[in-house]
Length: 180
Image 1: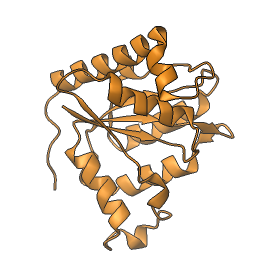
Image 2 (image 1 turned 60 degrees about the vertical axis):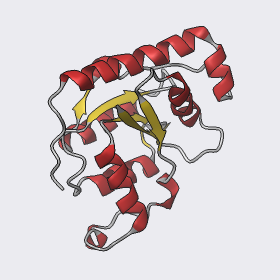
Image 3 (image 1 turned 180 degrees about the vertical axis):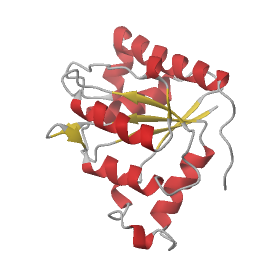
């Protein structure tokens, strides 16, 4: 099973990025977690450009299309979704690869509930299959490295549980249609 994980932060020391990087190390055998690294290369969304070949947009859509599920871990800025995350989602709206994609929403800051509500609304409009039981908050308590997350058994267990819940849900769903 192949999962695509996207951090909605471009910050070098982002807790969101650290968590999805840790997921790659915590995944079960037979589950690959690919960390998407192209968020900063996406141009500002412009529907007039949608028919053009933009390498960064094509790569994002292709990665989503090849994934069995999508994990999104995004920070909250000013009670909303981070702009770069919303921009990526906007590029996926007109794509054929996204509809009915299973999604798990992870959150690293318990107080950041506004962005989670906003991103959930956007994903529902986009016809995502949000897996509620796998959409959890895993507070990193100031952990500043992947190694620190992996060494903390409570955090590692919570991340493994979210992953296993997500992969079990994906396995129980009908296959994502190939609209391309």
